[in-house]
Amino acid sequence: MRLITTTLMLLLTLNVGYSQNDETVTFASAIKANLKKYNSQSDQAFERGDVDKASVLFDSLVQNHLVGSRFDDYALKSAKGKKVRLSKIKKPIFLITYSSWCVMNKGEIQALNKLAHKYEDNLQIVVLFWDIKMDARKAAGPFTSKIKVCYAHESYRNDEAIVATLKHTLGFPTSYYLNQNLEVVDIKRGGVVIPPKTPTMKAFELNYEVFDQRAVGFLDRQASIKPLYQTNTSRGRLAQNE
Image (tube, rainbow, N blue to C red; front, side):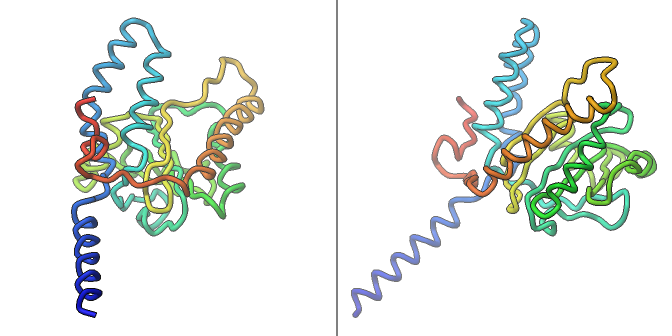
């Protein structure tokens, strides 16, 4: 009996030690650890005109260093009502960043509105404008009520962290796909390429096709994402020296 008790105590001690030493990596720390090297390599690729290489570098940054990291539980200011705390949403999140002075694609808002209605039971779309309150409210007008339209700006003291972590790292427009635990499932940068003079309906269809494909892939993957842990492994050190 004493042996069994001693064994159980040892197992509990080991389990507690594991949970204390293995902390989930935040997105903020992951992007900070890996952004400098990525920026240097991608700048070199763009200087050579190697757009494909730059794209590969971005995908590598996301898949090897950011997927599985956890977003901070931001409380976003809403353009249409109360603050939006990410952890209160209780379903996967598609967060896309814009700015009111950067003109959105023709048909893009309509595509997002349709997407929000199609996936309203499985996915929450959050549109985050890097703007002051007045400009964000104007920009929010065309969006459906199914989409949570929010804003943040450098001039607001409480927005310093989110502006530094998202806007000043990966820019905009950028799409962040988060599972219900706020862990990164995927990140996409840039919008859909719409040729000049494209008819409005065709532009809407092009935007919607891309958004819908990404949503399907995201929902398929989001449950299988493993958290990125801070351990003594090379991945836990955020692969700073790779």
